Length: 321
Image (tube, rainbow, N blue to C red; front, side, top):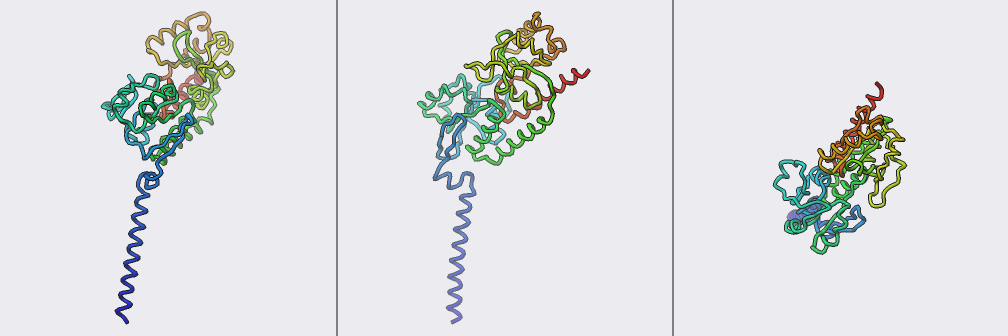
């Protein structure tokens, strides 16, 4: 009788052990990055152009065409096999990574040769989508038209690369910075010129740089300017309206050669129409770093906010003297 009971107990113990082992293995599979759910169902996302893109698994070979998105991917811990062509120095870890053009002029031959699982690009790449798809490339579109767009792009990339927690931390840092500067209204009236000389455009509050200006505590005198149809977020340069508004500071952003742009702007500011402006007389004509303001800087938006607020406070300090 005792032997029968012992055998039964052993059988029950073996069953219990098998059940626990199976449960541990099952939990282990789902605990892996992506887990079994990803392996069977894949990843489906909606990018910031409203396009639905599906992947069988987390993309491993990544090509990126925007410097801002490259910064974001680095912050998320995602390695890339192709990066945007740029004269701006990059980290040592990226120097050997092939350059593949940019969102306006992508080098499709080079991109295809890298056999990417995904191409990450800003909204300006939409004009190349059909060609990219004809070459068998999967593209995910991000956006950097505003601080909120950058946050959405970070969240999107976090989901795509199974880095959601890191993405939340990065977005949280941006929120903290915005909250910090929302408490400080500098009352500095500014205009942001984008371009070179008299052909420059004026950044509206709906532009990326205009949004940074507002969130860093500045006032945009171009809030009522009419937006250009072909360049959302920007207006034509109206010397008369700028003279009438008489801003405290003039910020300048350019994609072009800095020396040539500076020369063109000095010439513009020396004309009779501009030289009597408060900003010009008080030497508050400031060139903003193109790597932070000419296009979306991705996670480095926090640096852009810091830089803008610092410049606004300098101008306010002069105004109080």
